[in-house]
Image (cartoon, rainbow over all chains, first blue to last red; front, side, top):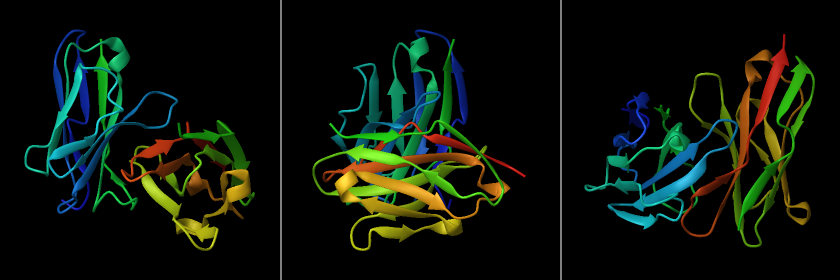
Length: 114
Length: 113
C-alpha cells in the first residue's frame, strides 16, 4: 500500500489479557516508531526501530510492553497482562531513515481494556 | 528533558478570521520542529516543518509558521481560516539523532461557517 497501515483498527480486550498490534510501514522505510495517544493528549513516544533492532525503547512504560520487527519491515507491539490504563490509540509511523525527516503516520489502533 | 507546550486547548473562529496557534518548546540543542494536523476521522498528517534556514516556513493549505529561537517558539499562522481547517493541530520537536518526536497536547480548532 501507499501509506502506513495498522491492524486491527479497533481492539477491545479484558483486563489481564495479551494483545498484539501490527504495523506495516511504507515499503523501503527503515525507521519505524510506535507512539501512544491517550485521550486529550498528544502522541507519546514508545519505541523506535532502525531496521530490525530497537534503537531506543526508552518510552516503553514498563516490561509488559514489548515490540519486535524481525525482518525490518512489519512490526508488532505486544502488551501483556493489559490494564485499563493501557486504553489509548497506538500509532505507528515510518520514515526513510532516522535523520529527522518526515514521519508518516498510520491510522492507529484504538485499544480499549475493559 | 525536551517538552512542547501548546497554549490553547480549544480555539473557535469564524471563517475568514486569522489564526495563530502558540507552541513553545524546551530543548537546548539543535531542534527540528513540526506541525501536524489531524482532521476528523483521519490520521496525523504533516502540515509543515523547520529544519534550518529561513525561520518562516510555509506549509500546505496556506499555513505558515515562524521559528523564533530566542523565544523557543514555533507558532502556526494562517491569515484566513476556512471551515475545512477544523481539526486538531499538534506541534512537535525532534531532538537528537533518533528522530523520535515529542508532541504537545494539541489544539483543537473549530471553524464556524
